[in-house]
Image (cartoon, rainbow, N blue to C red):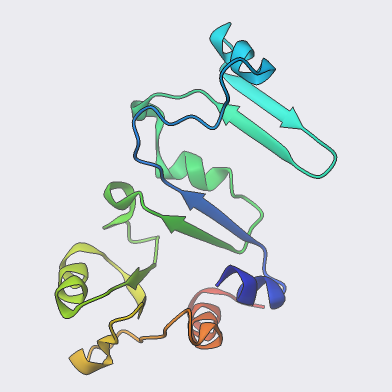
Length: 153
């Protein structure tokens, strides 16, 4: 989806939730790690081709609003994970990937609103009003749904 939408000249951001409690992008004994160990709460890494920001946070500081604010200036933000923060957030349309009918029916109870279904299980057999498009086999169809319902060129 990212490739298809950027080909259409949309700016795309992604947010990936990592549930491992002790995960860090930082590497032990590197300067950035030493800065954090010394107490820095924000560490910015700047190179010729990219920059990265490491912000030391606590679980209490993890908010959808704060994460989306970091994606300002993009047309689309794809969020993988963060189900507790996004499940019923009405301003966050969901594309739900399902592998079975059970996953699809559970998603209908859990996620609001659902923009589209995708994935190996074709939900068209359920006769829902929610469109289905397999992002791997037909990314253009799913991009068309996103463009029609969410994006205004």
